Image (cartoon, rainbow, N blue to C red; front, side):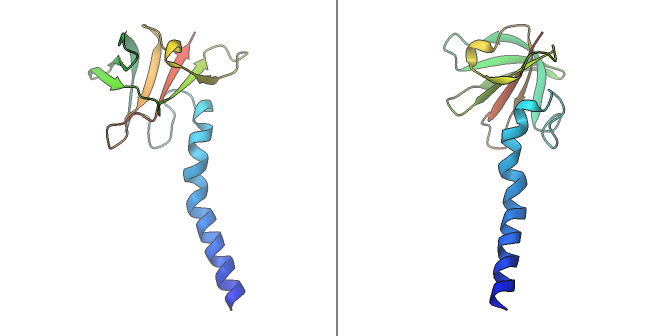
Length: 120
């Protein structure tokens, strides 16, 4: 009985932790606007209108108007390429340029866990 209960508990923990821990690792490969449960729900998608001189944020011209998003040390920048021959990679704030398409995930607490930037 104890072994069966232990196995059931381990299976439950793996099932509960699996999707949550795996999602951020795959976000680099999910195209802008295609993140399940995030894109068009908790994210803002549009062209980068302006960048803060202090590297603390950017204004994205979203469909429903401009939105300023704060970039902090915890914010991950994902660089995606329109050219499939080029590999997506983790980037930095320096990769964010005015005029590029971007998607910023704005969490419920107002933080920005990641920003994806599409480079032509």
